[in-house]
Length: 415
Length: 107
Image (cartoon, rainbow over all chains, first blue to last red; front, top):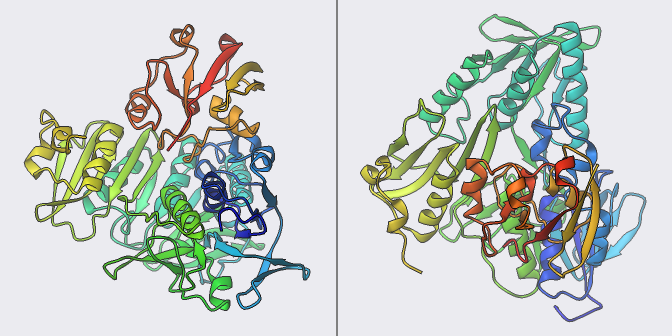
C-alpha cells in the first residue's frame, strides 16, 4: 500500500491522534492521498493549555496551534475543517459527510476523540453550566470567569478529576472563590493512589480552594435561566456564578459502532491500533485497548494519542509497531507538575523518594516486588527514570526507591 | 516582535517575527516551521521541541530551569551543551536575530 499512489487514507478527526496518523503515514513513505477531516472549525490545536494558559487569558489562538495549514500542506496532508462525518459504509469503502458528499477510501482511521460527559440533573442545562473539551468551551469558561470576577461570584467545580482541578487552580490563581465538589471520598480517585489524593486536597486547600469530598450534587439551582448555586445531597447550598462540570469524557465511538465495529465505551483496538476490522484503525481518546493478556485499558492522554497514532499508521502500511510502552501522563496545577508513569492498579505498597512536604518528590508503587507505577511531583528526572525502568521490566526494591542516595539508573541494563 | 531564524532539519532557513512573550516553540508551530513536534503543547513534558541555539549566544539566554534540564535528558537527537526545549524559550528583544537549529529528529 505504501507505494500505491492511488491509495487514499481518510482520517476522521484532526486532533492530536489524527495528525499523528497522517504524519506517521508520510514518515513511513506512504505515497497516496491523506485526508484529515476535522469537525471543529479550527485546524489541529493543543488541548492541554486550554485549562491553564488559555483559560487564564495568557495566550492567543495562534499559540494553541499544533500544526499550521502550510505545515500539513507541505506534507501533502489534505486538511478539511468544519466537516462532519455522518456515516461510514465499510462495504463500499466510503465516508459520508453532512450534506451528502462521499469520500472513497482505501484505508481508514478513526481519531474522533471524546466529548465531555454531561450531568443528568435538574438545572444541568442552564446557562453558566459549562464543560471543557474544546477551544470554544474554554473560551466560554474564560468569559464566565471574567464575569465572576467582575461580579464577585464564586466558581463551583463539579468533579475532582484532572480537568476540574486544573480549572480550579486556574480560577483560584485569578483570585476567584472556588469550591470543588467531589462525589467520591477522595480526589482523582480513578487516577492516583490515596496518598496523592490527600496531597492534592491539601495543595488546593492551601491555595484557598474549598474542597468537599463525598459531596454528591443533587441539583443545580437556576435563576432567570442561569445557574445560581449547586445543591448537594447533604442539604448544603453552594452559590455559583459558574458551574464547571468535570465528570469525565465519553469516547466518540458512535460512527464506528454504526459501521459495525466492536465498541465497548470506546472503539476496541489491539496494541497495534487495529479495530475489529483489521483494515481499519483507530487512535486516541476514542479508543479502548484490548491488550494481549485480555484486559482492557482506556487511556485519555497525549501519549496515547501519539503512540496509538503511530501504531495505527504502521498497521495501515502493513507493519507492526505495537504501543507497549508504560503509559504516562502529566498535570500542572499551581506550581506543581505531576508526572505519572505506569498503572497503580493492583499496587499493594509504595515508597516515597524524598519528602511529600517538599516541592519535589516521587512515590513509587509496587505490586509485591514489581514496580508498577511512579508519581513524580516536580521531579522530572525521577519520572523519566521510572519510564525507563517500567519499560525495561526492572524493579528497584522499595528500599532502593526510598533512598535518594541510591542510583536507580544503575539498575537499568547496560546498552 | 523579535526575529528568530529557525533552521529546519532539511537545512532550510526561515526567519520568523515572533511576538514577544511567545515561546520559540509557538513561533515555530504557528508559522509551519518543520521539525518542532511539540506533543505536549509546551508543557515541558515531552521533550519533542528540541533545538540547538546558536552556541555563540547560548549564554545570553535565561538558564534552563531544573525541569527543562531534566527533560533535556529525554531528547531523541544528540544532546549538546546548546540544546534547549523551544517551549521554554520566550521571544524577547534581547534574542533578536537568534539562530535556532531544529533537532533532526524528535523521536
